Amino acid sequence: MQREKDIKFMKEALRLAEKGRGTTSPNPMVGAVVVKGNRIVGRGYHKRAGSPHAEVIALEDAGTKAKGATLYVTLEPCIHYGRTPPCVPRIVSSGIKRVVIAMMDPNPIVKGKGVKMLEKAGIEVITGIEEEKARKLNEFYIKYITRKIPFVILKWAMSLDGKIATSTGDSRWISGEEARKFVHSLRKGVDAVLVGIGTVKKDDPLLTVRLVPSEKQPLRVIIDPRLEISPQARLLKEEGGKVVIFTLSGVDEEKVSFLQDKGVEVIEMEGERIRIKKLLEALGEMEVVSLLVEGGEKVFTSFLEEGCVDKVYAIVSPLLLGGKDSPTPFGGKGFERIKDGLRLKKIEWLRKGEDMIISGYIEG
Image (tube, rainbow, N blue to C red; front, side, top):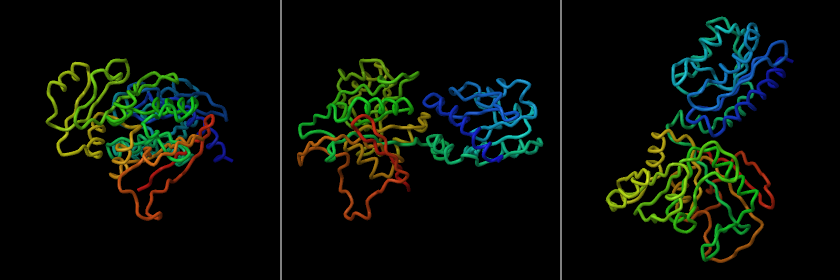
């Protein structure tokens, strides 16, 4: 009976945590509720980095009712000073008698220490309630805090016969309006969006969130080895998130200066080609926790071949394009045997208008 109650109230905490999607990075999304007498007396969620944590907001909402109550929180409370004070002392001083936690914080600074401090103060602690949902909620944060590189999502739209454009390069629009809104919701929830220079030259994209409301715009990342981007490219002229271009060392310094004057950050990398793993390390240093890769074929292939993909979203439209030279999502050598191919795990299906969105994880 108690476990059923714990699950019920943790689901509410998870619902609250979700409200912070896209605004808390590089912090995790966290929700909390204070329950007394089987009734919620306080609610809170972390809204953005630097703002009060979920536990503090929920305790303030509960006020004196927190004494003797149970606190449900989706992530282990912190014990260190960051942009805000630690949460555990605040929980202890509130008189909370029981804390239920969905998942332990994978951050080495916190991991297990918050629970120990609560228990030392005489507070009963329960962990692992709705843990799988909590881990999925913060899959971006978990990878970033343990590996210091962003969680990588590949997204593409294709016809039923697997083409991402016609033989002439026309790709607008393979997917319908509802699916495009879904893509903009993906952009809203990540720190950065990446494409290759081929996509910039062909589609002249903005890489901004426009079709859904958003408090912020993602960082716009371009892979442009020879610095071929046109000075007239829309993403250089119209408002949006900051633009970062990864190029190879030795490119035209006048063009670098021109781009820098436009507010673009140009990162020159050594070698004959841009290594995806090095690019991700650089983005990690910039506190980019999540990255949405939107094309094109060469970029998709590079991420896949270097083993740098965590999750994919394939938007499949009921459309036949044909053409043996029409581009597909991936090129390269490919696999020689079916059994060696990369199968997605934890697959989900979602219909948007006439389109079907298939998502899943690439494990290992």
